[in-house]
Length: 219
Image (cartoon, rainbow, N blue to C red; front, side, top):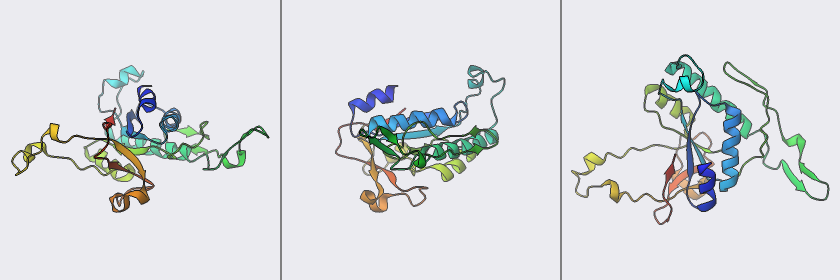
């Protein structure tokens, strides 16, 4: 809800939401991110987490919190289901013909018929393909499981900045000096060599705009 409201009041900021694969379902989450991408004109991103806080289980009616192996196996399948759902509408499926009254070409909307260990999802998504096709994928975990999952899933290469070490440098960098600006979603051909070589679908990548007015946003 907050990011949807911010989508209407910003133009150049990437809207990146953190959402757990342990305590969500891929169909509802895929629909939510598709809607955000529509509302923002193609600026949605998903920061995938598996929820490390064991106390979260009680809030969803579960007696125990899953162990990391289980959480990341579920995350793998969760992401694959979401990707299939976002691809269940072809790019030109929407006709929107006011004369014939046809909204979409049914032959270009496909069930996914997913049946896996954690999820059974028929599909298709009940939301048309969004401007990006799907959100840009992030993964924030730094555990061994998290890094392995990020290598398979991430669209974005993370490069941590050691602010403590920078204080000893000739030109130290402080947190106030970083002056982060808009993270804009740009076509890959506009970024050239900046597109991470490991990106699964290098159609979109993140570029930090140093002359923007909006701030980078991560929720």
